[in-house]
Every structure is written in structure tokens, then in C-alpha cells.
Image (cartoon, rainbow, N blue to C red; front, side):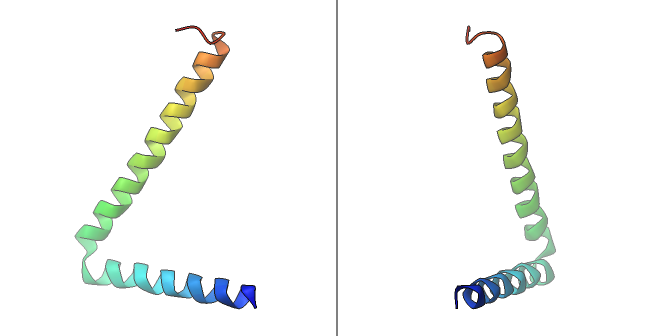
Length: 59
């Protein structure tokens, strides 16, 4: 039963994404850019943390 809800949720999400892309491509591009900036920021933060750990936790 849970699998059916997952499939339905995924279907609704895909339909919504396609709707946004078709109705307002510029806004959809902005959303993608925001997402990539978030991922980039997270990767930069993880890299900074790993550098800090590699340096012995010293500032």
C-alpha cells in the first residue's frame, strides 16, 4: 500500500514540475538556478569543514 502512495506522490510531483516548466519557463529556470546554488554552497561548506578537520581543527 505504501508503494502505491509513493508512486502517486512521484506522479504528482512530475506533473507539477512539467506544469511549471510549460507555463513559466523563466521561473522554472530561476528555480533550477536556486537549486544549483544551494548544492554548490553545501559542497563548499563541506569542503571548508574537511579542510578544517585536515588542519587539525585549528582556525
